[in-house]
Length: 634
View 1 (tube, rainbow, N blue to C red):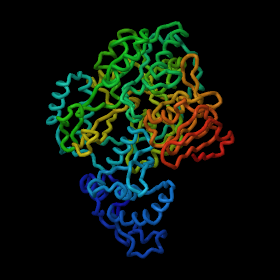
View 2 (view 1 turned 45 degrees about the vertical axis):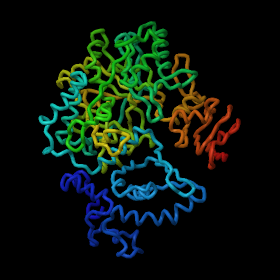
View 3 (view 1 turned 30 degrees about the vertical axis):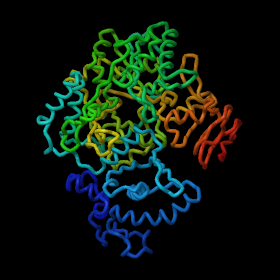
View 4 (view 1 turned 90 degrees about the horizontal axis):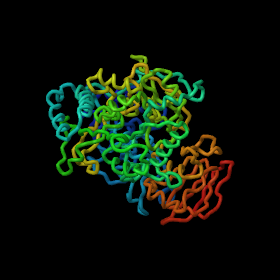
């Protein structure tokens, strides 16, 4: 970055303009201002380069110069190894990787400017025998990758200038559009608040200087609480069920996937509710927040469980929000497919959707005071009487279930203390300034992450709406997209999103409790699904999915080849059912593989097919309990 090295990206953008900083940071052949050779930061003053001629050390570097530096290494070091039949992992600075991607894909100088590579997310390139590009894919959930790409794209951007479009000049067009679409007043109020944050130019970042770590929290296993079953009569259990699971290749609700013994997520949820009703000799109120995409299929699937409820007694539908044209902040239009003009507003829409649909008033009117919320794909998140009783005893308006962060969780959002209010808040990766990334990922400092299992006092929720003119002031996140997701040349838009866990910062006196990992078992990828279908997990009499006792609360680590990221592809690996993983620490599958029936994995195993076409792994035991790595070449 030359003379810009070490400067705050957002402040530099505010001083010189987003466009100029983007040219300096991301253009193809225009380097930033050169750093003076007398400056201590010049590479000629770095002992690492003491044997390199000063004339060969640039004072700044453009992407064109980076390509000139990277390609010789590709041809001399990387390409020969690939030609020899081996896979290569390249770890490098983002600009070096962009230079390599440009070459591999034959990108134009213009196209590479829009390439955003998220940090530390494996990006796989498949090449043919002549090292020509075939395809690429990330080894991470599609929605997570998109969020991380957006975070990269937003680095170095100044806040929207206050001299831009005013709320008064732009808002009437949004209000008219949302009213014409038939959206209720709560949905409109929620978007108006979010849009107002964008137009105001206020930062949506949460810098390190504004927060501190949460030193300790009560732990579920240590609570001295006597469960009170009578509280169930005033509690509603709510599952978020709006996701289609597109990252796993699905065009239906992810909750309709089969999990165990012919049961889908929804089957198990329904049977858990029925079992708890029977064991406590009481009725239980259950509801779903569906999306327009999941409502019909979900209601049809649950029609065989009439005791759960029907229609408005069983579900309400989340809202949708207009996309914002990035260039002038006007409502995005796309006549070719008007549906692309709208987007989901994030699961923070739970609260305005409850208000606008009348669900909140209906529940309060029926005597319900408490709500337990979780994701439908998290089968560990069941109603827990001990937690309910504890929540009620604290008199807190809001409680978040958190788990201890490990290195595997360092990219996800974390709980923190708001230095200004002294209360708790949730910081997502999209809200972390680039310069604070190291602190964000420090799991010893920020020890807790949000499981999205939440407990809410409905009376307190209504009071927040009344105090904020029908909206709830959740932190706003911007997600940069194109209006047609499949047409990267279509109009650039902003999607304004909120997270439901961020409400912890809206309730005075909100608290959190540490739970065991057994209550956090989401299925985000086919890796998770294969493990869940195996004997590493068991179905209890009350229809909970739990790890087998032999696992000691530690799930197997499954890593499937990128070609198996979609469910239908994953199922071709195991036509006879999932392999035995009860004694497996780690299973990695590389290449096209088919498991015969009665395949058992133990310890750490890699199954590899380096050739063309599928290869079959015969029945048998592979690996041992000593966890020594075994590589099976097919």
